[in-house]
Image (cartoon, rainbow, N blue to C red; front, side):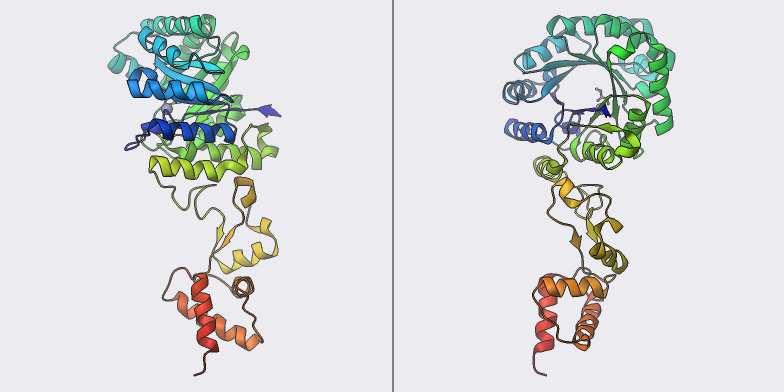
Length: 386
Ligand code: KIV
Ligand code: ZN
């Protein structure tokens, strides 16, 4: 079984979600929850970006001791020095240096030639290496970069001392087979690649961040980067809870495991949603309000007989106490009878059940979801003398 390390960037890339602005005490609360959740690395922020950001990263590094703490830096001496200042007291500090490698970023954003980018990347890694052994290097926009250029620059940064090499799909452009092929290309051609950790970092512009991350794992990547609830720039990052559960539920397929304590999933998801103000859509995989809800009669009948008929993981696995049988217009007699039992309503005959069920069905024509109070009211109405 391969061990996949989980690199959480909720507090850095996740905080780059439009409209999100976390205060120091909120970041600390999230960092503690991530530690309990079992992530391996927390990217606490980008210290050179502002004094507040620096202070938050420093505080997290000093307080949250059970995980490694990473700080992001551009390949600039000032950024790298500032990153180190912020995390120097962490139990396990990591400097994460990045530079863009795609033609469009090198030409228009950096205004540097490919040779100059290689030089800057090497200088950045060497500078970070003066401070700490644990240095991650990222090729921003790797998926729109020339693969042979990636081979060249990755070879050089490994020689300079990078211990983790991350090839991000910065703009959510790649496709699963293509992303996997890119990693295989690098793995087959870069000398010494087996000595470093290879990492995937995906964005969700085409809704493929999780699929691309899983494809990268199949290609040999051993670190996955993402955020809780998939928050992040534009359409967001890969949702870590989805990756962790995919690896757990389909261990037979991936033959890989993480250190994630999945029973903390719903708690950490709710906390991130509350503090960032970004709601979780009801149909979101794993943590959406409907992820364990059953509405149709056929499904309700199935799960009441055996949960595995329509549930590929148990609600307990993600920290819920039970699934949810929703009474609505698609519900059948089985679910309705179970609800009566749960509410302590004793039905004396099949005729009585028929009448109550008919009244329930009529009510679903007026209301989308029938609550416990609605069912009790049906019973009281029926019991009342005409
Ligand atoms: O998406 C990206 O390329 C990033 C890098 C800074 C790692 O977030
Ligand atoms: Zn990113």
